[in-house]
Image (tube, rainbow, N blue to C red):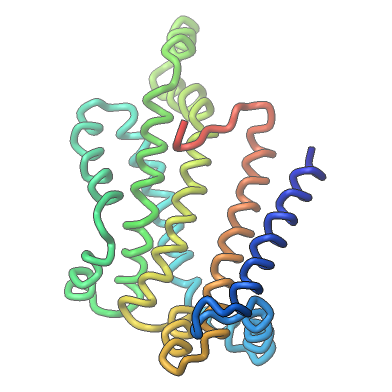
Length: 253
């Protein structure tokens, strides 16, 4: 099964990159380079250290924002899932945050917090936290009543039920929400660099576009997508190991 899955992933990548190469040769647009030109630009930037320096800048707000979103998001999600009052109080806020156009909020963040690291971290949190909170709350809220009643029949305290029944039962869906939140965090990190101050990978994209160096621009975009895919695949592997034998939960379920 694993070999078949890997084969299909490789085949999908070959088809995608082949279509990219053909589209670049047609060409679809003068601003659309071929796949090989973009990979050549990526190798050049990796070789001279440009890409590594850019990621050192990009990963700072991403790592801080994801850490804050994961810790607060899971804690708030459990709290919201356990209490109808807090569900009524906080769920609409996170639903609005998830639905609101982030680009419209960025000028307000810049006005309040400037163009430094704080604004970029907040953008990542705004993108990542609603997904994590809502998935966690839904998982906690939908824990079967039968297993909670079984715990009470064995004289478990409320804290025991939360720590030993509800959280373990909800963990697969919580972890799936964490993966989705991290994916949204990657989007937020790049959007912050494009809209607030052009630094890191966002700076490469902006500068390359301004001088019509389209292979470098597409190489930078490709690199952030590749990093996100690799990181999310790593989380998926960790999830499969941690919850082996459990049915994995997804936000769309």
